[in-house]
Image: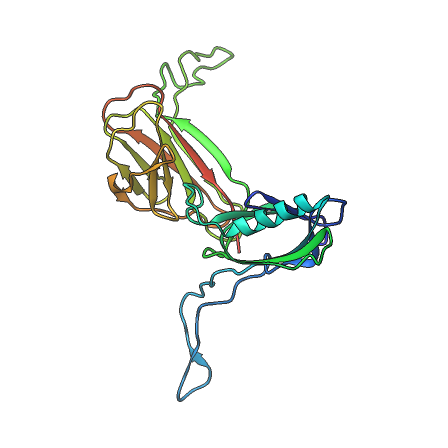
Length: 294
């Protein structure tokens, strides 16, 4: 656990290290297993007639199970009861286009913020015994065990050809440099974390027959075959294999090719943007790459 100040955001509740007159405050050692590496899912199988065991193959991690122990100091009985209701509501189930059925937890320490999307398994609220404070515990399950840093965002329009002559052209101080600069129509996807990550992609219209995305390092493709009207946005979530239009409707069925790709730890990839059909307006591709940490 970090020795510096810590702030935790979960479902609209902010928990801080230290103490104050009113608010949610983390107990000493109250952020549990946030920085731990989850256990391996591999089970060794002993060699019946030899030393050691058989190679279990890739050593994947199990889901993460972080928990929080904290207290709330209230200014009045009404404030205390409102805080209890806020904590109890963390168990409320609701769907978000960003996190699905889970809630996002963000822990900020002296090294910056990292996040996980979790389901709230248990909220244990202790009896306040007539005082204006109470202790509580929150148990969580993160199916994806990785922690994610702030996303690096890069955007581009469709490719644009340049014009004029290749610059510089000439010698002896005489240069021909007229013409316009083109645009490749590519975005970069850097991952400076310690584990592979996936880039969330947003494509805005308009394109009458959809679009094609190519991961330049490997040639893997995503093909979306449906009109994207001007003003509409298609959000692609590779980790969930999901496509959503305008944050509401599932349009995954219009993905005729979905060869999703990861960005390796310490790597920088790039994505080529291309349209299908007639282009109206100014279509854009935005890539949001959050570095992943194990």
